[in-house]
Length: 79
Image 1: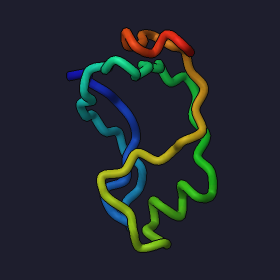
Image 2: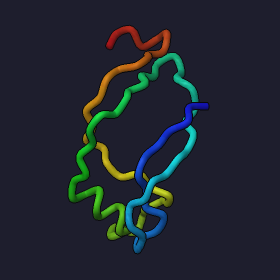
Image 3: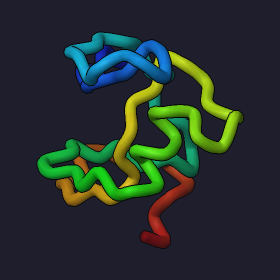
Image 4: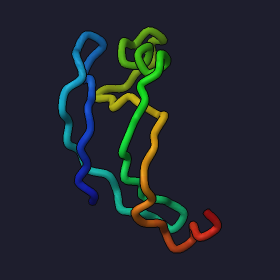
């Protein structure tokens, strides 16, 4: 398992706070990215506040990322 750090909300009313969690290891077609920068857009805010009534918590918002490829799986060499 990969120890990971991020910022998460734990409910629609909570604020972002430091959050540690574990991710599975890199599989054959995965790419491990060291995220250096992350944008939080308006849709991330809607998800964090559960405006669309489908949010799952804890949630680490932010899907617009910039980073560095650290490792790729054996089957992901077409990247």
